[in-house]
Image (cartoon, rainbow, N blue to C red):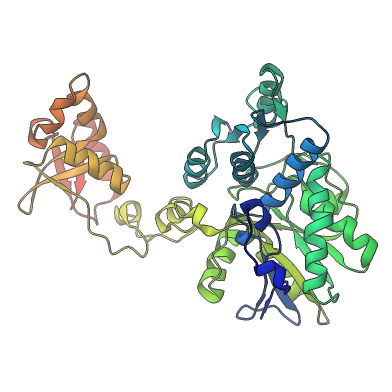
Length: 442
């Protein structure tokens, strides 16, 4: 079941991509176990910038314009874990603003490339530090805004126009699409704008609608809702939600239930949503879906529940939709044979081993490093392994003279190697390393 706003005006052409923000469809989840409940997801991935953050970017920039705080050509500065930056880049590009974003280094490469393609200046900082640390992303953004003449600090975490965008837009859309029949909404908290805005809206029009918090395990917010105490934050891999503090604009007072969802549960839920429902969702959407399913399955009567597909999974192809990354992070099971197969196996992979020939050029080797995201390649002569070449071999060979990219792999490859079988015990490698040799698993 797909529920869309249905006026004729909404299908008419628009003169500005910003006009396409909002009015996203609702889709009912029918192939997952939702207990006695009906579960709907609002496809915020259908916004022109690809995420729910398009709503608050428009709201915050238009509020600043209305208040006379910014004008064309001004520099906007913001701290973001991803989608707010993309949304601001969209609005800034359309309205003629410059944009500088400070982002933590756990952001996916797809998001970073997207930001730069849209003209944003990107400053990377650490994701393993908290508030008060000199490299904390929000503190850096605030400091840069003070140092750059004429810069405007968007400050989504304290900006009242953030929740207002959801109070005036998202909430009324959901209420209309659900035919004014709704029992619960499951939200995550990055800034708290979505949850706060929806809480205020439903407090006015339907106070019986329950607000449910979906939080990554490691975030302080779900434990705070349950105990009233702020603990120490852990770490998590899900992007865009979860915090180590309660954001200034975040109002948790109407949250009835809160769920802490592990990274593994989040990633599996998102991957399951794609396999079963054909909906391509990001990592935070997996957290929301996992929490919503837990909520639905524990009800003792039917309820109508809404949650969100906050953004598209195409921003996470190098992470949670990459079996290699999932296995490296421990989310997909490897073999447990106690030998080298545990280290070199790749789940669900039919791809052949990438190699180069001794007569190939260094440029060919370099291209394969980049294409297959590897740092070393075995060198073959026929079916026989005769050497290995890695990135440092190529770097040392061509540094200062890029014409040497035309040289043959045989000229720089390492030949001090020893082949071993996949069944070789791991501890047998140490003796090979001590002799200065390179083990090659054949």
